Length: 399
RNA sequence: GGUGGGUUACUCAAGUGGCCAACGAGGGCGGAUUGUAAAUCCGCUGACUACGUCUUCGAAGGUUCGAAUCCUUCACCCACCA
Image (tube, rainbow, N blue to C red; front, side):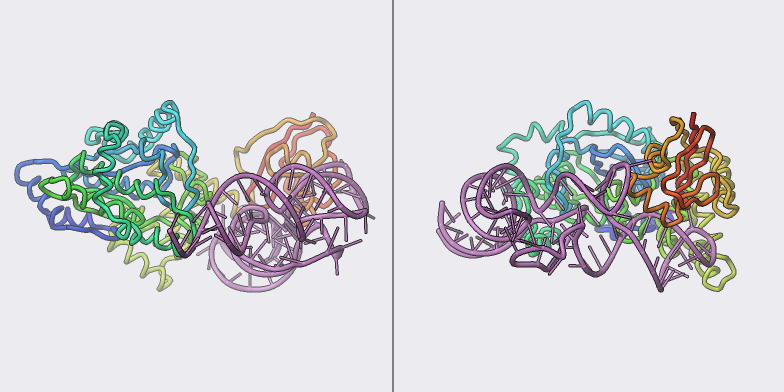
């Protein structure tokens, strides 16, 4: 029983520190029902969840299955500093209202996966604000600069002359202090969080807590490009609130290699089933396309439902295999005689008339499924379906 | 506080008075092929009803017939020293 639980909990993790501690927690839970806490921090700056976040959330949901209570930590205080990601250190300051708004939509999305009754939402501003300068100093005395520079991220940036703000040094300390305050039993985060997660252990010890949190790291999910991590700013993400056909289409557009990564981290199939599938694909028993379609269906179903997912699949096949037109697309109204390039811009298919001209020259633009090559064309009254490339459509009413 | 180096398009990175709307690479977009996969080949990649015009090389001034390139001031970044 415990063994199975532990196995399911460990699945797909990149690294676990102090797995014995987790085992003890599980034993206790099965003995007398004692629950334990699992902390995970979330940044309130981006209100849109994508699949990358769900890797973590799914893991939390599994802990909930086995007696874990989730401490859903909103980093409203730490968001003001910004985690040292190597990117720009400057961040816009969020107002209280912004944060509340973000959190509301954030948690609403998160509870598609998490059990609300086994989740406590906490805000680190509640205790970090009270820490004060004295508390900060005490906190900071736990760490040496040399140790800080050991952090992979910092040492790389230091070596490559990328600036490091002093405030960024503070970030791991504060995140660690959160664990002290919350007395977390386990903390989970991405592999990029290793340093911060370990800081929690160190500080819990320094502040005299009886035991230190176990740490679990999840791999970072690659984005659609398969190289960089999934993030909204890179535009390589699949949002959990996206339309079924978008989710379906985006999953299908990933590379075959990446598909296995997604299977491992996102699918609910057992690891042995996935292994089998992988084998079948490599022996050509199963076409990779089929495997990918199933994955796309599973993921689409998770955030919508089976029916919608199937519809998305049909739509997809009709549009891309049958070269048909999608059933619904954005509609626009325009004035009679509008220049085709301008119409493309107005219909948000092109960013500029210059780009529109180029695409027309390159045979990328069609009206009602017929390629055009006259960039000087003006549209007369009527209804048209404009298309750029294979994926961009719009319906235009000219009057 | 001192000394030196730097800031070019989405990113990296050439260009040190006219040949610069700016080499090259990556990325992106499009075409062919295909499974909206990979790989490959080709084209495009500042804006503008457009063989011309306008705006861009950290910012503002200046020198010049002409400036990404030279000068001045400012801002920001980095390294070393203190």
